[in-house]
Length: 224
Image 1 (cartoon, rainbow, N blue to C red):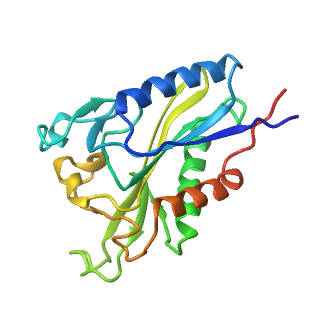
Image 2 (cartoon, rainbow, N blue to C red):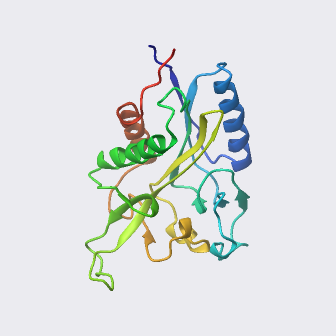
């Protein structure tokens, strides 16, 4: 039994989406061949929309607003842009339990633990992808419940049991940029960010929390 090194990469500025996908695919292939370490790549993108494999055309409500990229990850439409931390996880799921459902659950737990570092309670919701926060300070919904906003998205793809794509956490993006899509096909809930919640959190703060919480949320790599 052994453990693999995970390389942590942080890119400054805004990373082109096609460039990111090319890098992820090449790194995932190299990991599958045993020629590279696993990696977590922290980036920001210029404003753009991505369409996952389940995206519905009618959910792209403003197709001319930002570039739209077809993505091979699971899920529907999502937004990426400045002020949002995207963490691309290129991990050997075959060596981390060989269980896709558990892996996705662990990614959600990673987000929830990271948010908890800032005293934010992130939660899963049945039938809704991503991580959500309750907004008790807002007016109650029609059914008498506090509204809930999405703060993080999750979408992954596996090739030869190696993952790529990953998670995104809204730190301080322009939330109006989400108006051009129906995020993840969900119309009855909003979108929020750490700064929108009143927290003076920086991207560097989030990066520290992501790294701190990673090992305790993801099944360890096991080498045969």
